[in-house]
Length: 132
Figure: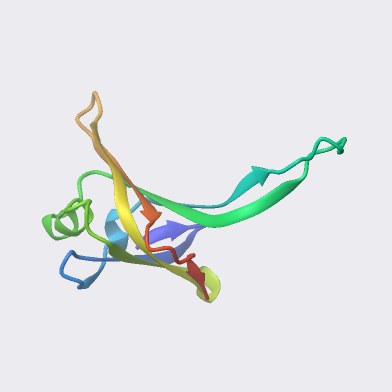
């Protein structure tokens, strides 16, 4: 399982066919970035900024050391043009799920022949991530 502050967590992603697969053993780190759009709407009569909060966005990045087993590569590195469902079960019963597109896959090879990779995902269906 992937580690989160010394505790285990579970990262599940579905295949393009819709089958959920636990790929936690291939994932070293998970980064969750939530954001809200912002628009400055300051009128000429103001001396400080006025802002509106717009829609939510979320980005997830996972990384791994070494190359995942073939079954995990098939799920993680397949089609980037298909909506995928992810679920991250963190310690203390915190869970987040989202419908995402895969946006960036980077695969590297170090001077010592070690392998590493990272995969970036962003929400895509107009629904904010659901925390439970």
